Length: 98
Picture 1: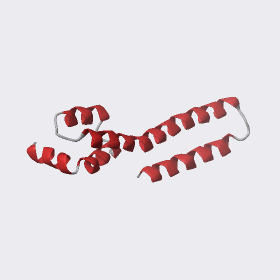
Picture 2: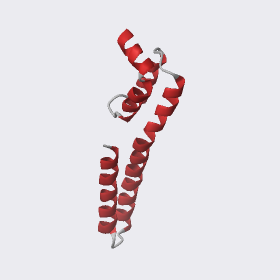
Picture 3: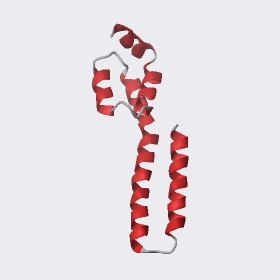
Picture 4: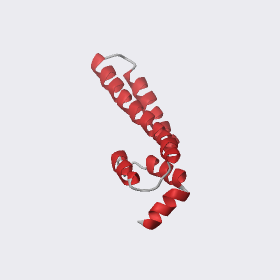
C-alpha cells in the first residue's frame, strides 16, 4: 500500500487520468480507494475531466439507440441512412476514446 501511496503522491495526475479512462474499475470504487491515499486534491479534480470523453460517448450511444428505435417504428424511408450515420458516429467515438 505504501508503494501505491507514494506513486499517487508523486505522479497522481497521470495515474488518475489513466484510472478515469479505464472502463473496468467503477468510478465510485476509485473514489473510495483514492480517499485513503495521499493524492493531491488538485490532481483528483483535474483528472475528473478525463471522464468527459467517455461520458459524451455513452450519451451519444444512448441517444443513437433512441433515434434508431424511433426511425424504425415511424416507418420513414431514410431509416437505413440514419442507421449508417449513427453507426459511423459510434465507431468514430470509440476510435477517438481508444
